Length: 381
Image 1: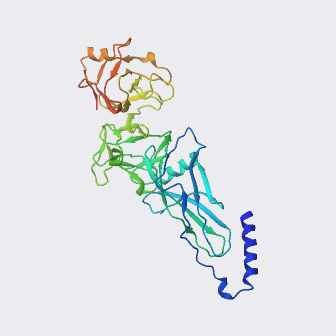
Image 2: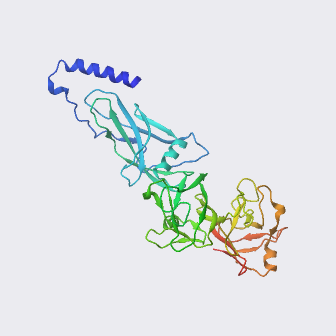
């Protein structure tokens, strides 16, 4: 309402002035764009966003005014887009009549993710300011564009389709949804395992151009469970080479892992899975929340999980999980596997602590931990 009133006053003033001039002066002059530039931030500046400081500034901008020769109310809209898209689908951060704007971290983070920022990976985001004059017939004018390097957190829900997911298929009628929670995407779905049963993940529902195939993740150094492979088809999709069945799939952008675990029951915890707990694992010696690491039965007699292992720390294999402290549901330490004829990777030794736990001696990093109960081999790849 205030802007409408201002525009009305400006229009009245304009009519009063033009009555004393000749007809040529009624034309709207071309705007001068040479000085319509973003002053701050500078091109190439960067920021790491954090969920612990949601109200901190995510981006603060100042810019020079847009010069119009015809008096009018001017509005400025800050827009962003992923670098390289040429603002094909700009995302508005907000509009103001000032020559400055600040957007909180939590709001800016969401808009960057929507624009295509990769969580926890520095992503180049283009920023520009759109100027709009209240003069009838005036077209928007854009400032220069700068690159702002953003490390976003969290994630948006994503989607999966493909012949390998029979509840979906290669269409958008019923895509599988991967739910986002603190940088971790999860879905439970039926998986097929034929040579043509492939699938792919997508950032935006209904948009084939937002697909993320197998090389997309390996290019970001994700460690992927061995039963999910590159289909080596034209689009290099994912393919499940484990048994067909229902699985929980997890894409963890915090630790850069993709895992699957069977879901033969409707409960939250799979009785056929084992579990890793200990200081060497991401959750430490705790069963609270989702701290424990599920060691899924990915193939006949084979338990496998990709996880971050911390050097010179310990862990143990547990046989069950009831949703609480599950210490009493059975466990297996280093000597149990030795006494049962297992060959154990040299990076795993007996901790010789009170419980004879496993001790991981390799470098800290994301590794593929596997227990093959058929060949009786425990490996770390």
